[in-house]
Length: 500
Image 1 (tube, rainbow, N blue to C red):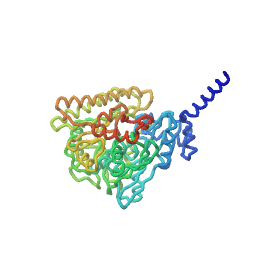
Image 2 (cartoon, one colour):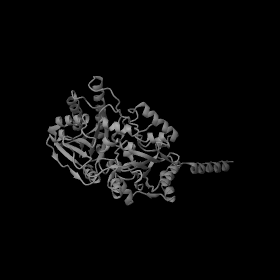
Image 3 (cartoon, rainbow, N blue to C red):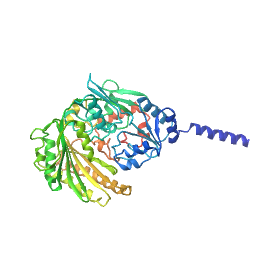
Image 4 (tube, rainbow, N blue to C red):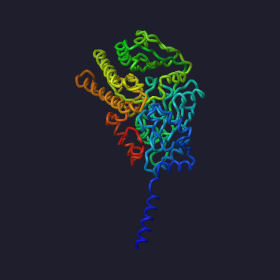
């Protein structure tokens, strides 16, 4: 009797082990046996992949292994096999997003899209199929090799990855002509939670097509983007540099440029940087043509900047040049806020208060080794949103009768010992902005308008979906229930802005 009980107990244990989900290490071997390229710790490719994060904090996370699918079929295989495990996984494109776990993972499977690197130009309809494993400079260079007179709406620094940028909306130097990058998608190829592959476009799976334009990683793994291309030739751009004593005039110039947007071919990002021995303004300028007409950037040139602008032979050259401002080897955090553009009457007061709040919060972490705080003012004029709506819209659904500024907030610093202090400062920073803007709205200083958050710049605790319009959120939720009813991507990816 006792021996039979012991035999049954042992058999039960063996059966449970056989039925238990595979451990992360097991799925690595399983995928490798099925032909998927796998890299494990201590290999050169493994180490290289982890260095290819904009934030060294993400690179510090050590996945159990890295899978490099080279086809949509292999991505489908990976997703199906993940159902036989209970561990988390992450998907990595260019590694631009600094939030830990969003494109990085500790002790789980990292799916790198690096081998999904196709650029296929179709001259008949002037579209390009672009893989998520590319950086924008790589995509543009590949397109140049086929047709140097076409471009795609993509990142403003060449080193930004395609995948995460597209799913967050994607703000571009070309947005005032063509809307968000996501508005220029003709079709997504997507591996769904059950491993099946669908093409989402305006005719097929239009609900998924709409949800992916700003929906992040909640619906599937996008294995290719079919994108509109647009005419391009020589472009003009580069940087203006200003000293900190020009701050009031710069803030005024940004406000005015946003309201009176002088030319749809023009674009700017205006960034202030503050560190223990640094306080300066760096402005990115772009014009889609060999030279901007007089008057386009006059508000800024009147401030006598140090000028490093010029005409570039190709758009690729400009994007590649902007990579100079990507800080390598630093830890990095990001956050965002959206403000309606203050009127001319209150603009000086409001814009200065924004700058002062950021400057004072940055002062609280100046003792952090290697720290640099930055604030980037990104115009979001109605000309962008009108183009976005004309192309079918997106989840962010900014109204076309209101101008905005999208604020990006960054800290870069040297060591992990400072993580908690910088995290607290970043939270205080964006919460402070939200409280300031809400206060101005209550006082009638700013208009009471819809203020969504820009996913590509958002910090991990920010309420991306809570700030979205109910109509867009409902659309996305219905798509999630239709295409991922068991919340596979909600519960199994190691990071992202969860839809619910």
